[in-house]
Amino acid sequence: MTEAVSEKPVGALDETGLLAAYRTMRTIRAFEDRVHQEFAKGDIPGFVHLYAGEEASATGVCLHLDERDSIASTHRGHGHCIAKGVDVREMMAEIYGRRTGSCRGKGGSMHIADLSKGMLGANGIVGGGPPLICGTALAAKLQGTGGVGVAFFGDGASNQGTTLEALNLASVWNLPAIFVAENNGYAETTASSWSIAADNIADRAAGFGMPGVIVDGFDFFAVHEVAGEAVERARSGGGPTLIEVKFTRYYGHFEGDQQTYRGDEVARAQQDRDCLKTFRARVTAAGQLTDAQLDEVDREVAALIEQSVAEALDAPKPSPDDLETDVYISY
Image 1 (tube, rainbow, N blue to C red):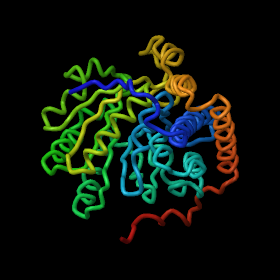
Image 2 (image 1 turned 180 degrees about the vertical axis):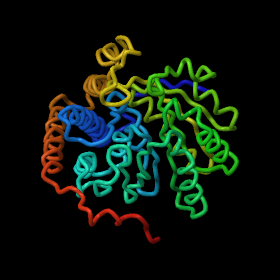
Image 3 (image 1 turned 135 degrees about the vertical axis):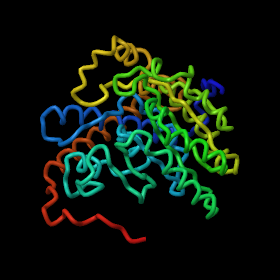
Image 4 (image 1 turned 60 degrees about the horizontal axis):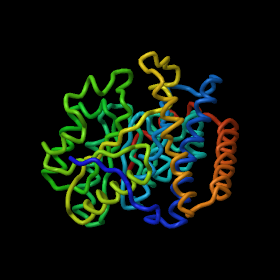
């Protein structure tokens, strides 16, 4: 197991790549902040689990992926969806339970999916994603597409048998699979320091014969570098990798969580380690991007989020006639 800290210059990405990274992270943050506000109004049905603060993980990984690749997510899946290219307006409509949503209003926040984008779905089953990407990774290997499967899961899911079995299977079959353990410190309200026997989730990689890497989840560049190495290894037949990304989620486990189990860690993270602030500081100091360019992205993203909410509120809800549709699919 190794710990990765990026000291490389930001020149590893060109201007287009840096702007794409910032746009994705800013879109995730703006989307989640707005959902937080909208949920409080009582118009969004069901539970909502927000990804704010964790943007560098989904973005740093998914920037390496293309149409050959698939990802599986968790109950906290909005960031993964956006990073993999799911339409933001369709996502907002889905969260509002509207027919124009990515799953026609039938999935809601925890079950957004878009197979056309390689997004297998957010998942309310803890540890439900890793076995799925073993399947897509096996298909990619047998078909010779060069595709990889990526499973995002939390520190709570790292203790699930499904996750451990998937890690073992991926190594036994030498699959082009990447397991991204997003350790935000808590499985709901249970601290990972209390519930995980090993010091780090990535330490477990040795037991499955694969590389394990710990990365600072507040540092987009560190995540991007580690993910790039894992994707290259997977595509070239080198097998799976376990990446542990450590960071802090800004909101509670769910909207309405009183967060009595936490102190001032969120405020400290927002002030000193926020991934968007550190990204901006680094790229502007290096002369790669200007504040004006980043401010323009901020404005464009804000307009997109505003449009998404307006369209969602105007969209129709599923009707009783929709009840028996989308039950089966023909391949």
